[in-house]
Structure formats: structure tokens, C-alpha cells
Amino acid sequence: MRLIKSLQQIPLLLLVFLPATLFAAAEIETLEISDEAEVDIRYMLPKTRSSIYNIPSEGLYRVMERAMETGKKVFLIASGPDTELVLRVANEWEAKHDGAAGLAGVVLMFPRLNEGKPEPGKEPEYVEAVGKTKEVPLLLLEGERTPNRWGVKHLTTALAAGGSHVHAKLIPDVRGYFFKRQDANMPEEVVTTQLAGLIKASLFFLGRTDS
Amino acid sequence: MKKLLILLLLVFTLPVSAGLKPYEGEGATPPLKLVDMQGNTHDLAEYKGKVVLVQFWATYCPPCREEMPSMNRLMEKMGDTPFVILAVNMGETMEEVEPFVKEVGPEFPILMDPDGDSIGAWQVFAAPSNFVVGADGKIHYTLFGGVEWDDDEIVSKLKELSES
Image 1 (tube, helix red, strand yellow):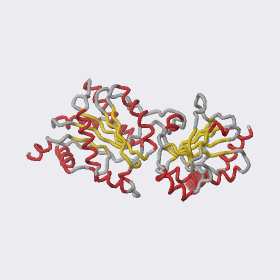
Image 2 (cartoon, chains in turn brown, green):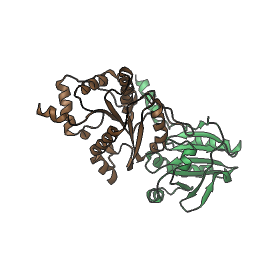
Image 3 (cartoon, rainbow over the protein chains, first blue to last red):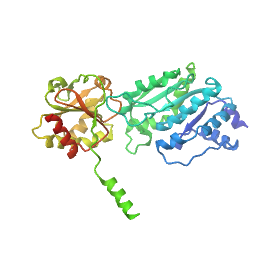
């Protein structure tokens, strides 16, 4: 019971497919509580884009419903192509609740939301989930030393098309998927160890954004 | 089953198709005027009459690093064909680019674009992004991703373009 009380003071994060090492102890405890509450959604899928697109949104949606019952601020966070799923669920959440309804924000870390291969000289096309959210604020994080940084402005505009406030931050001196790299350099190692703090700062920032 | 395995093996061991894609964009070729690592200015407009491969690349892009030696070999294979490569670095500093350039020794200019102005003008959102500009100054082909640039199919397409 004491544990639950202390957890109520921190926002609840719903992290999708981030490495286990990035979970803070408090989040692990929260997930354990979710387990006790029999909210247990697991998928054993190959790590491909099509797998993500085929994950039905109902599972995460149910987790969100249970999370809302805790009374905490609820954020969705995902990285890479997995950002499609959290955007899709945020869209559905808004559609069913006629607004953000407690969803405090979505953090898109190094999002890979292109539909198909990029074509030189052509504006990118995005997956359907992009640009649908109306109220929930979105925060996009991208590495500075990645080609995708040149598309951040375009993606930000596309994400904001539905009405959401979208903020984009470049993380200096890091390459794409730096937290998974075997050849991580010094800045990437530093940012990886500070990733939890970076996420916390992102939540703080989103929490201050009017939705 | 054995035949299927052999077929699959053949498919996966064949060299990657050249992949030069006819350009479908509209409008004029964007301007490109940048300074190379030696301080010389290169203006695409001054290369009219030659086929120009404009490549946008970065040292943090693994396929870009991998394919650059094959661009040297492409230069060699093109021989006397009027052909130039302009490799535009995407927003890095000299300090970041120099070690890689020393290692590979590109035989074509590396243009620096620290503010990424040309990247926006050319609608580049990923790397490596390649544009093949014909002798007429128009973009004829594009290619996204790493390839072996000295592939015979690419060489013959570029030579054909030069003769057209």
C-alpha cells in the first residue's frame, strides 16, 4: 500500500519496446502492480515494421484505461517505428473520449514514421497515424547526427496537422539508435546513461504544455 | 525443396540491382553552389555539358561510408566520359569529416554544407540520397541507399545518359 501511495506521486509511463535497461525502478514496480491487476498484454513478434503495424491497439488501450485509474499523469513513449503504435492508440483514445481525457502527452523518440522508402527530391509520406491527434501534446526527440534530423521540421508540421502542439528537440552529438550501438562514442554513452533524465525532462516539458 | 533453396541462395547472393530510378519530380533542378574542403567553390550550373552525380552523405551514415570507395572506382570506369561527382556533406564540421576523407581518399570534391541549406532545397530527408543530373542540367535519375557505384548497370546507364 505504501508503495502504491509513493507511486501516485510520479507520472505513469507506458513505454513501448524500449530496452529493459531504460526502465526506472519505479516504473518496473508500477508494471508489477499492473501485473497484479491482471493487465498483461504481451506479443511475441519478429522485430519488424510490419509487426508493429499489425499489433492491435486494443491491448495498449486497455493498459491506458487501467493507468488512468491510478490518477497519475499518463504519457506514452516509444522509439523508432514503434512510435506508430503509440500515435495510433493516442488517436483512438482521443476519438473515443472526445479529447485528450487525461493523456498528458506522447514522447516520440527517434520516430521512424515514413510510409515506404524515402525518395530523393520528394517530400516524405507518413503512416496513417501521423497528423491525427488533436489535443494531446507531442514531443519529438531526434539525434543531431542522423539524416533524419533534416526531416524533423517536415515531420513536426505533419504531426501537428490534426491540431496537437508538437515540440521537437535535437539531442546534440548522437547518432540514430545510439542507445543500442556497439560502437557508441563518448557523447552517446553519456546520453544513454542520462536517458531516464532526458525522458523525465521531456515529461516535465509536456506537462507544462497546454493540451 | 532443394531447387527452392538454390534459387533463394542465388537471389540473395546476386549483386544488388543498380536501382537508378527515373526522376519523377517536377520543376527546375535546384541550385547548388558550395565550397569544398580545400576552399574551392563548385557551382552545379558550371558543370552543364557533363553528367553530374550529386550525392548527399554524412559520416554518421553507414551505407554512405561503405559505398564511397566504389565511387572512386566509378570515376575510373567512366574514363573519358564527361562525368563529375559532387558529394555534399550533410551539415557536419571539417573536424568530423576529415578523418574519414583521409581514410577513403575520394577522388572527387567533398562539398561542405554546414547549415544544410542545399539539403532543404534538394528535398533530402535521408542519406545517402543521390541525384544524377544530365548534360542538359536536368535531374534524370535518383537513388536512395547504398550501392556499389561501379556496378556495370550503373556505369552503362551513366554513359548512355552522357551520350543522349
